[in-house]
Length: 580
Image (cartoon, rainbow, N blue to C red; front, side):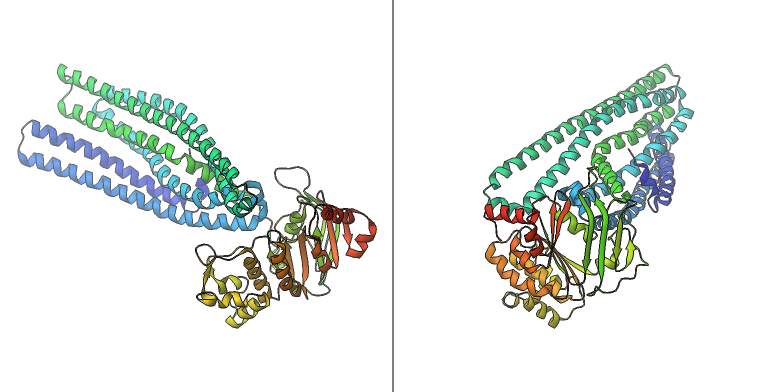
């Protein structure tokens, strides 16, 4: 029920210590509440002086108030720790996802990662709030009450002690069934999240291809599977709740019958019998509360496990001692015998026997879809880590490094993907993403270089106009130009990574944007992954990637004379009517 890694979280031991003290005090409050409630009733029944009744009732009232004040204190202590922990977990998850880069997205899917960072953390918060208090209630309160009940009537107390593990046994059996159902439900929920996010991101393409209705049926089918699994889990939860209520109610009824016979026989006085009867439901209450909340916390338990698994994933150490100056015309990056493999495959997704990049080269990376172009770009950008092997050699600016997931290197480049992310912020803040302190004049100049002068001047609030989700809509071409404006604003970042930046644009829009991109190439190392081969004319070096290997590399003229993979790729594109 509780992940052991939970006890390694900062502040957990102090919180649990305080919680144990508060619950112990609450257990005695419950005990005194039941005892003095019984005393008040018996005193009235025996028609004793009103002062005696009032005194017993006053003790009951004090115990009652203390019990509920301690409940408030328990929730405050645990809630304060949970709030800080959830804030830290959310921050750590986002940092870890950023540190792991595209690899985690490729392994788990966009929807799963988004669900984990948002809803998963919220479910974890609910889980932590419920499980700690309920678990400690179950561990402390019944046994303090039972110890007192043994002094009241050992026969009934023995029966209550014996029936307790029987109830727990049935709950464990049903709990395992509910756990299996909940795991399946959570897996379906993750699958649905991946489908939903991927469908949402690809909706424009699906509509253009006329597949939106067909994909809607797919989403409906996945949603229906999730509905069925949820109802199946609820059936188990309702059955377990009924079983628990039945056994605990039957146990209390049996105790009441025994006490009734004892009163009739005159072997037991009214006060101990009534005290036993009042405290019997309190004895089973923590178990019932725990069982009722158990099903509500199953998703939270799974989510916490996923969060802790993610946070425990190793990340490559950043070499803080690396001295890396701004990329210059004579700076070199070489890779020899480097391999990259994904977690779900033992085969290498990319193998590089030798690759040397120097100065302000314009390097085109071409190949068919799935050949490994993006993998190569992610490796060079430090988003993916190479497999460690003794033959591997990576040299950056004359310094040997184990990988390129280094802050000193990543501060040298800008990454322009197929679909640049537009933040929910002003146009100026979006352009100044890499340079938050940039002046308005510098931003306007960068927008002009990217061909967005007319665009920003027509916006309602100019540079202060909110764009992105919930703000002013921007087209795919405008989003690409905003990404280019970011690059124009920070010329000191002299390495440019383009991952098929015009893949989703029509040819007319692409040609217009090309006029803005080409001037940006000057005094930069350009790594340009594309399947549109007309870009090769702007490159002075080309890498041909096929089946996860660089099968050819050289200048466009050299490759054209070799009659190899490059020539075949150009011929295939021409045959399919692709853009040259």
